[in-house]
Length: 324
Image (cartoon, rainbow, N blue to C red; front, top):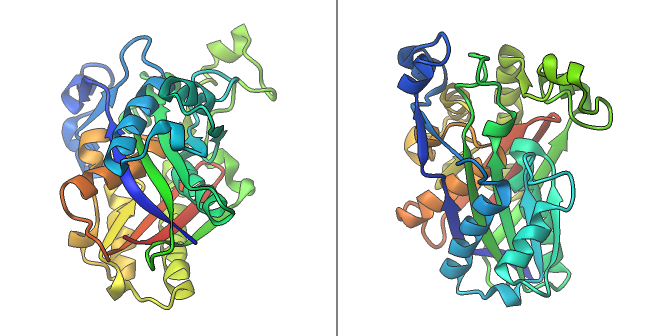
């Protein structure tokens, strides 16, 4: 038994924040942002629009594409670091709104790697007998972004993407997943405050520790190295080469990182899905949004070998190899 992606969906909030808008907020420029990141604009959730709102809309589109009813779902996994609340899980809120009455539901916290981690968990449960698993990546990164910090506020956006995993005996689906972490590098990307280590206080808020902090140069080096290694690991595990890849769907964090990885792998850029110019870094939502766009644009076809790869806070990095 194998888990096959039978439907994808995505959703982005209506409000768009352009680089020109950011020029009026912090000391930056469109030219600098595009050159350093490849990002031109990003979507931001409306006031009161939460993680579950975005995730529910993406999920409904994925279920429609798969032809699967919410009542037939066995499990819902939501990858997020910006859930509606500390508890309950955002997955349970989405489960209720979809009417997925028999589905188990929980969140997975692996930051930008969350969707690939969730795919691996869903794949494992399909192999134990589940028929349909809904995997969602949904983020409202604007809530943990310091809009006065020009080094980070240019990077992030809000959005959600989803995929339905269904059991199949066909010789296609998720071939393998490769998950890694290194907690010693936790401080390269983190939100220091707001948890049990540093609960919310007036001082914590005054110090702006509730916002994401990032060491860009160090993160860049680790990301390029781990993404290349993880890609080669996944291909080797399945007896494939870079030449066998039809589509590469990386985490949409930074165009320079993705191009550096492609160069190291000797992977033509026409096989790489890029959309961060329109969405920015949407953390766990970035891969499923990019995947859904590629599927709906006809870039991914039956029989294609597709690789999804991400790195993120933790540090975590992960790769999923799929035969479509």
